Length: 466
Image (cartoon, rainbow, N blue to C red; front, side):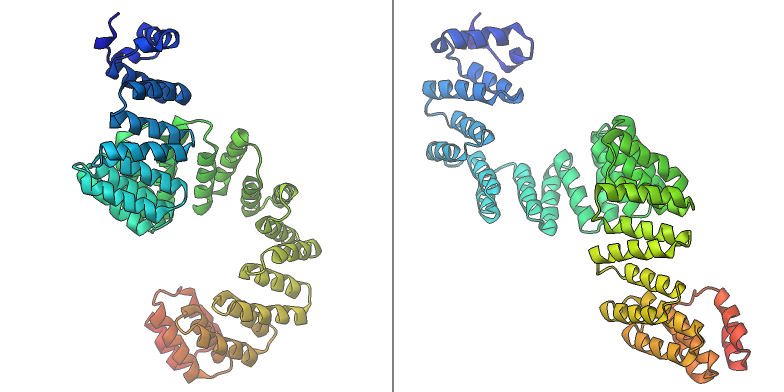
């Protein structure tokens, strides 16, 4: 067979020609002299991951055609893929002298810089490549990748968009731009791009999965479920997709439907503390307290540093009025995550339930110091004091809260109630007006609260407006 007329299509896997040329090179390398045959054989080996063989053929071809920049660039690329970057850069130096206007040389230098963590230098080389390129879309894409690597998502978006202006069907740019839009909070744009990518790649389970995540963030929960179900149809053992569907059902408040999805997650990836904790949460929400305790405990057996599992266990013990174990578990959670205000609140509630009033007040005071902008601390603390019959003290607590959170309708509203209970009508009316200005849609049931406290004509007249 005459190798002079050989072209790349002869190199398909299983083709007799590929075996012929492999043997030809092994037995007598000097007989393989056609440039296109060498180039095609190199491409075949690269595509099949046989980089050492590709390098052998490249070295042979470079000896035959030493002044050919394309072969030197190919050799540099193979060396980089083999993590022999120093050699690759030396080869590129030679190639650049032969062909100083070849943009691919600068793109490879940029890739080398990225691998070494020299991202600004990578941008420098890509800018050099842009000066030379007639078709810059791929270089724009590479610049986007560099900025994405250093988490400069705004600049990454700019260059992915530039790439798509030149090539609207660039699938990698569509996919990565969708990801960046999601990160910077442009959910609708992200969803549209994933949808566009799926038009090109309808069987990409990852794209469907990511689209589901974006829909979920947009509170388009049914769309999220539909997208993630497609991911599972394409890849049945896609455990992360089952996990995300379970979380979506949790967001929707449908814990019964969430449960089997978490079990499917474990079927394909085995148990994990996170999955066991989610199963515990679902059981807690449907009031299966013993099951909840069991799964939270199982999660802690795998990772006893998981604060949310300790918290879930505490709530489960609290639900069955085992306050001693609840407090023990909650203190474990708090020791692991001291900066979680909900843990402080729940511990204060448990101390109150068990009659430890001084501990309760101390916990609320400490929590209010740590988290002064968390309104539920002030509301719960004042609520406990009010329930004990100390109306004036409850109002004093919320006056501090209003100074801290002047634009919170709930705090203003609750302070109005406490002032009314002391028959301080004018002051109560001031905070009541403020509450309704901040939130005109406050629940109608609040009107009943006021009627229970007072039938003062000014209050009744004001409430009739709502």
